[in-house]
Length: 439
Ligand code: FUB
View 1 (cartoon, rainbow, N blue to C red):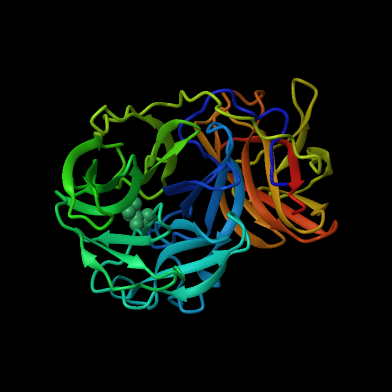
View 2 (spheres, helix red, strand yellow):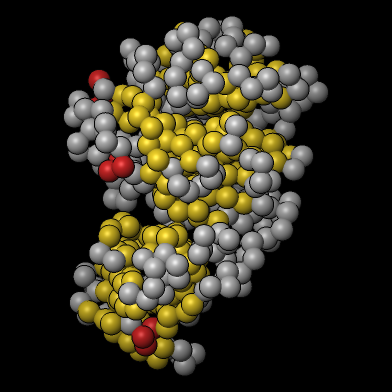
C-alpha cells in the first residue's frame, strides 16, 4: 500500500513540473513488472551550493502518467560507508531490474577531492522504491568524470552500463551479478558534441543513445543510434531544444503505448541548481528518427487509474498545533482556523503525537494558501531536517491547496513530531494530513 493521495489533489491533466514540493533533477524512468512507471531522480537540496549539496534520492511512481506518488527517500550520502566524509554530491542516478533484484546506480565521490574521486555506487533491493542497501561501488571504472550512469538490460538478459561527463562517454557490459564489469569500459564512438547525461534505450531492435551537448549553459539533447548496444553510433541530431536551464538531463520510456521524454528545467526556482522534473510526449517518425519534443506546461491525460485515497490518512488541524516565533492562530474570512504570520523569520508550528502507524514511510500534505509566486516552509520530522518545501501560489490567501507534499519516515506509534518553520513568504496553513503507508 503506497498511495498518498487525498481526495482533493487528484489531477485530471498533467502539469509541468510534475513535482513541485521539492527540487528533483536528472529523471531516469523505468516501467517495471508491477505495471507502474517509476522515476529515479536526483535531489537538489534547497538552498543549493552549486551541485555540491545534492543528496537524498527520492523515487516517484505513477499508474496514469499524471498523478505521481512520492515513494520517499531511498538513499543518502550518510548511508554510503565508502563515500566522501563531507557527503553531498549524490548526482544523477539510474536503476535496473534483473532476476528479482532492483539495482540503483549512483555516482558519488569517495574523497574530499570530489572531482578526482568519482565512483559508481550500487544499492540493491527486492522492491522498486524502498529497502535499498548500498553494495559498494563497481571496480575497474574511472579515468575521467564518472558520472551519469545509464544501464540497459537487453532482451537477451545481458546488461550494459554507460556513463560519461567532461565530453567523454564510455560503455561496457556488466556481469550477471550487475555489480561488476565483464571486460571493462570503452569509449563510445560516433557521438557528436557529447557533454554528459547519457541514456540508452531500445526500440524495435534499434539502440538509442541520448545525451546533453556542450552548448554552454543551455544544452540541447542530442541522440545517436546503433544496431549494437555498444556502438559504433550514428549521430542523428537534436531532439530537445534548450529548456532554459544550465544543464539538461533525462530519459525516454514507453508507457501504455505512448513514448515520453522525462527531463528537467528551472521553471520554479529560476536557478540552474534548483531543478524540477517535467514530462512531455515523444514521437518517432516512420524511419525511427525522433521528432523535436514540444515542451509544454502539461497536457497529458490519464492513461490509467488515479491513486486511491490512503485509508490511514489523519488530519491535524491548525488549532491542534503548538505555535512559536511569532506564528499566530486566527479565524479567516471563511470562518476557518488558520496559522498565520508565518512570514516572520523563525515562525513555526508543530504537531506532536502524530500517528506513524506501524512505522516507516508516510506522506505529509500541508494544506496552505499563498498569494506569493513561491513561499517556502522548512520541514523537520522528529528533529530530522527535510530542508525546504516549495509552496506555489494558490492565487490568494483564501484559496487552499494540499499540493505541498513529501514522503518522510515516521516512528511506529503516536509519538512523532512534525515542525514546519516559515520565514519565506506570506503563507497561511489550515493544517496537515499524514498518511502512513503501513508497508
Ligand atoms: O545533477 C548533477 C549533474 O548535473 C548531472 O550529473 C549532470 O548530468 C547535470 O544534470
